[in-house]
Amino acid sequence: MIGVFLDRDGTIGGDGGGVHPLEFRLYEYSAKSINLLNRNGLKVYLFTNQSWIGMGKFTEQTFLQGCIELEKELEKDNAYLDGIYYCPHKPGDHCNCRKPQTTLLEKAKIDNDLDLNKCYIIGDRLSDMVSAESVGAKKVLVKTGRGLKTLKDLPSSTSAKFKINYVATMFLLLLNGF
Ligand SMILES: [Zn+2]
Image 1 (cartoon, rainbow, N blue to C red):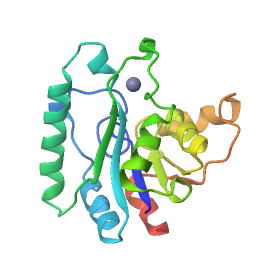
Image 2 (image 1 turned 135 degrees about the horizontal axis):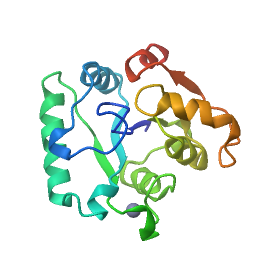
Image 3 (image 1 turned 30 degrees about the vertical axis):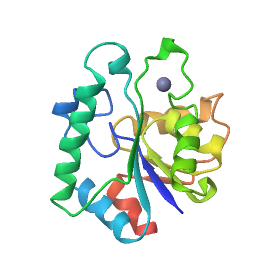
Image 4 (image 1 turned 45 degrees about the vertical axis):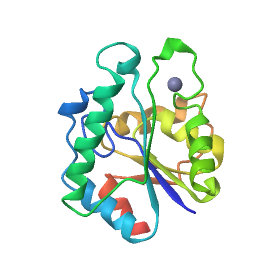
């Protein structure tokens, strides 16, 4: 099974930073793009760090309610998520699920019988790319959100001695490559 892991903030909507779950808005092309992935037989997962839960800015319950709202928006374009994988911790918690760590990807692999080497991880941050590299998945960097900054910082990064597989202006356009 091939999965596409989508970062949330800065990749399918929002502005790249954290946002209250009920204020999160998809980019106008995101639902149609996810629908295209659905129709092509790819599994689609949300893959997101939600450190604001750990910081007490909102509860896990509120985050999950935001996910329900997000799924309602997707439904309007017949798009859906096959799963949601998130880390609710803040950086200082020393958990093992916060990106760039790979616990969530390993869990998704077991839950869905995925071949991670054939999966895609799409995001705007270095942490997305590092997690993809760590499990041998394909790295897709979008220029939305923090993507341009990530692209600029990449050559000098010590934790990222690898090549990005695809750099896309935005989530929508890279779909031409599928
Ligand atoms: Zn975590």
